[in-house]
Image (cartoon, rainbow, N blue to C red; front, side, top):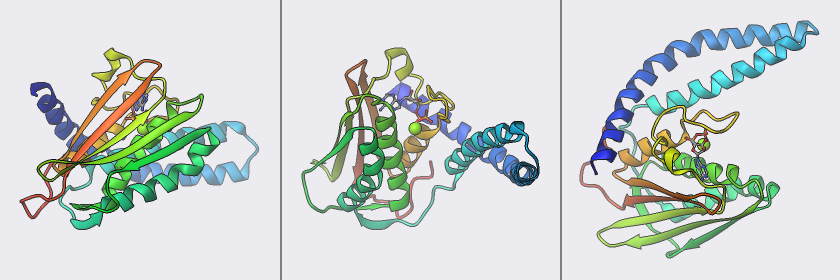
Length: 231
Ligand code: ADP
Ligand code: MG
């Protein structure tokens, strides 16, 4: 749709801007962090630890911006997406259990190879599942489902029972730095969006307040061009 295209344009411009800024900030930031850590060891002043905490926040944001800015043409591999998905779920299981959350997987097939950059897709899955976990303060279930669609595409659904996203905020999700979390960067979904697009896939989010949120990702099993999408 028109709106989705505009969203995509925004993503490209912001991504380029992010690249420049993140690179410029990283070096001085590393130096400041290093010296502040030395100061922290040398004196008994709690302001120093506050400074360090805030520096960590900046570091998180810069890290996310750098991910956003990474070049998109990469090594495409044939990877079993079912395996990739279950490994990611296993990775996050401890975190989920600690919050009384059950991660339930329903995969239509045991194995399906798709052309992708596995590490990038893993990052997408982690971001989405983490968001789901963070939205479920009272515990509950998160379903992770994989189905085959016609025409060589797959559909992956992440369904949570969390707090949901208000309608007016749903439209803001593509914008950078929109976060309702104290430690959030508001860049996670942008990163997902960018990675999925570069795989010629789609990402959609539906949500109902106090009921939960569903994130749907579709991906092609093959693409025609040898290189990944430039966006
Ligand atoms: P961050 O997680 O750093 O806040 P994201 O881009 O991952 O940034 O998410 C942006 C915002 O979207 C979150 O702060 C949250 O308000 C909302 N959000 C994302 N996923 C969910 C979800 N599954 N349930 C409820 N809210 C969500
Ligand atoms: Mg997030």
